[in-house]
Length: 507
Image (cartoon, rainbow, N blue to C red; front, side):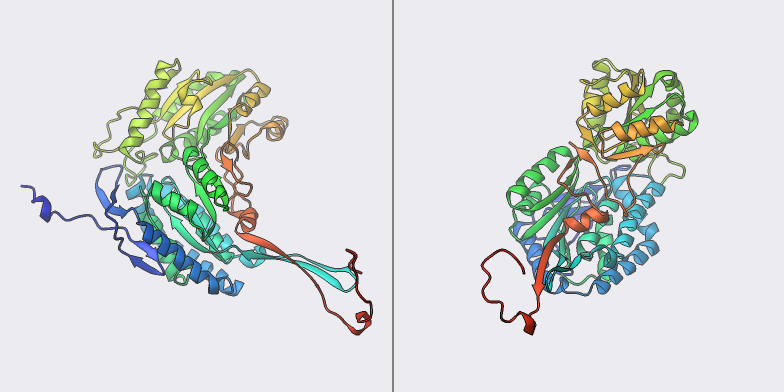
């Protein structure tokens, strides 16, 4: 017999982080955090009130007064400690991530690890935030630059990498001397909150890192708030364009990493098995819910005969809950996402693509309520088809053909997006031609997901990016700092009797 509704135990609430304290929201608007493999309600996340958003920003603004003057070594040591805490808690973080996001446990560990690399980079801030000096630019005059923090910065992160992308944002912003307000995805905020708790444990002072939750209203409040100086965003093109336009009009510095349609070219001289394995891993890992997933493969010349091998290998991938040993891909994030992906597959058939492998409605033992789509492959895909023109964000691989490399490059360059691309070949000449002529920000050669390590910056381009500077790497130090130029002269006795100088000369 079911318990009366009034006595049912509600799922635990996700807290806000304001002024160094985990705070229960006073909102009346809540959303369930749901395990996408089972539909179990894991927690309830609040949609923060305007007063709570303002309190988080005010806390960050107050903390900036002292944090900006904290010695650079003291800031760096916090991130040395944080990377140690993340390593010690890796299993717990991965389990949390898998429960709320759905990706497999090994992939969840990878999600945390790629964020951890940025934390390690933040610990090297002493070498990254250096100014320049020119001695004697005029007689007795020196000029130097300092890279100073901006103030309160904010980050808006997506559901697909709830550990990695928050770790792209707040460590570098805080290491450079800013304070931060983070809005994680309302679909899977639990692992993000755990990372922020570890950041407090590592020594981040009260108010330097704050977390608010919510949807469109909170995003707009971040864009409009007069005390927020810069915003970093990762997510869909629709929301990213809105954030960029609204926040830029409010005078903020903004970087937005957005949607993608990433192509891989397979040349006929490529190593067949390695190429197919790499592309299928990049297409179907995390159930295709990566902004750097390979969603289109261009088979050149004789490689167009390899479609049966793509299908056979994809069919053999194991679909299950993320905790299942040996699972290759888990569920998509929500029931709405499942409906969206299945709708794209139906439209692909209607619009004339050939459905080589149909992953709809798989039977997954023990997970009959999960949001599962198995690997799906279309061939004969052309521009103008919905499955090509739009980002599906599910385990659907589109195959197109080309007669030669030039035709394949032209095909990719005609697509408006420019996040990532790859070529598989054993020809150095073909690889060099590709990397020179392709108009995409991140290029892989015999490597399907060319996300750079944090020594470099993420450099998506064209419709995949708004703003000049990318997240992490050297570019993000420039994003989170203001260059101040100081020109100075100290008078000595020999300069006392020069009289008034009304020219622009420094002599």
